[in-house]
Length: 113
Image (cartoon, rainbow, N blue to C red):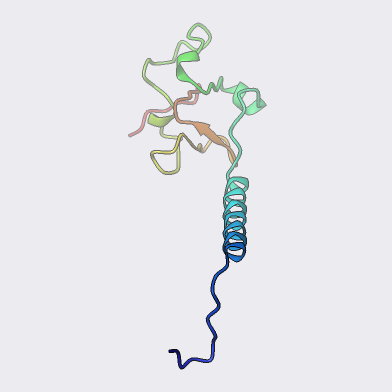
């Protein structure tokens, strides 16, 4: 027996499913908002990217056009890369408001110190 003022009502299947759907929708909105707040990925056709020969995959570097390319160099081991290690795309100090592929490369690559 309860001595409180709230009366307990049995949870019907309909009420349970409704609550579950509302919770799922709220979670999806939160995830959607987080994705919308994430900076866009740098497009290789962006004029700033083209100016420095940015590619999403360092294996695609045109070594004739960029003879300074060193095998094994990529955005992940570049001094310009920012953000938390472990993310596939991270901010770069060269491209404000956009993120680059950690496996990418550009001619502004600078070895980490």
